[in-house]
Length: 454
Image (tube, rainbow, N blue to C red; front, top):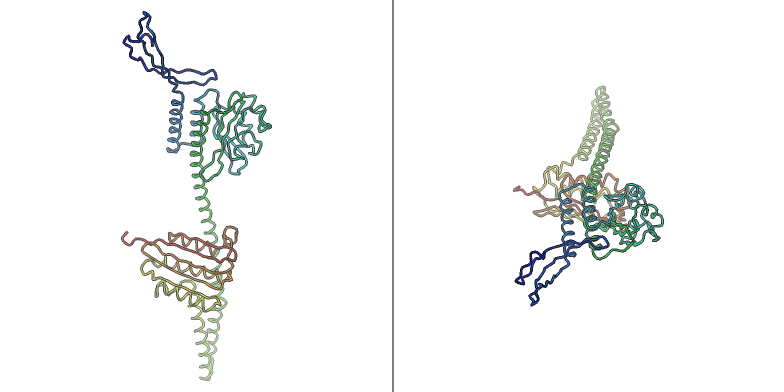
C-alpha cells in the first residue's frame, strides 16, 4: 500500500484486509492510509482502520439464511436443506461443529436430521436416546423447551450419561436451542459443539438464532406436509370404512325389505290366493261374496304395505311438493308421534337444489330426528332452514342430554353421523356438531349455493 502513496496528502485506499484472531476466528478490517505533510525529509503516514467484522458477519448470515430459505421455497429435500444450513454455519468458525436433532412423533426419542461434521459413531450413540431433565444439551433443551448452554461437557451434570460419547471426539462444549414451530410443538434442536470449553459470545448468539429460526421454517414445512398427507390417508381410510359400513347397511336394509315382503306382504298374497280358490269352489253366491270381501280387504292391506315400503325407500312428496313442504310434513308426522315439542321454520329453497341434493338434505333432517328420538331425551326441538344467494343453512337443535363428541367413540363410529357427514360432503358443504353433557346438541349444516350464471 505504501508504494502507491501519493505526495499530495490525499488518502490512499481504502482497502479490506482479512486477519485471524488467536482463538481461530477470522475478521475483516478496512484500512485507509494518509500521508502527512511535514517539514522533515522523511514522509509521515497515518493509517485509519475500521473493523468490519460484525458487518461482514451480518452480511454473511443474511446471505446464508437467504440461500437456505430459497431451498425451502423450491421444495428441496429436508435432509439436503438442513445439511446446507449447518455447513454454512460451520463455515463461520473452524472450531464449531453443528447438528440438528429431530424429535420423533412419540415426543420422547431423538434422531439426527443433519450433522455433516459429527463422527458417525457419535451420531449412532445419540440416535434413539430419550429426552429428559439430564439428557445432555439437546435432549434437555427439548425437554425444558428452552436453550441449554453447557460450557464444559467434561464436568456438567447434564452430560453425566453422555460425556463418554463426546469427549473422545474432542467435543468440549455444547450450546443447544429447541426448534419450536408456530403451533408451539417441539420439532427438534439445533446445537453448536465447540472444541474447547466456553460459552457463546454475541456473534454465536446471532448464529444460533438464525439457524434455529431457519430450521424451524424447514421442519415446520415438512411437518405440515406430513400432517396433510396423514390427513389425506385418514380421510381415505375413513371413506373405505364408511363404504364398507354402507354396504353392510344396504345389505341389512335389503334383508329387512325381503323379510317384510316375505313375512307380511307374501303371507297376505298367499291368503288372497287361498281365498280366491275357496270362492271359486263356493256354490252359494252369498258365501262367494263373503270370500271376495275378504280378498278385497287383504288386497287393500297389501297395497298399503307396498306404499309404505316405497315411501321408506323414496319419499314421493319431494318431487310433488318440493323440499320445503316435504320437510314440514316430516316434522308434522314426527311431532304427532312424539311427546316432544317441535318448532320449525323453513325457507323456500325453490330451484336452488336439484332432486338428488334435495333428497340428501331431506335425509339429513330425517336422520337427525331419528337420533333425537332415540338418544337425546330432549323436551324441545327446533329445526330451521334458511337460504340466501350464497348458501343454505340448516340448524337442528335440542335441549336433551347431549354428549362429548371428542370422547364418545360410539358417536364417531355411528352410521347416523357418518351418513350425515357423507351427505354434507356430497353437497359440497360443511357441518359442525356442538354438544356437551346435559347441555343439548346443535347440528349446523352450511351448503354453498351454485351461481346460476356460472
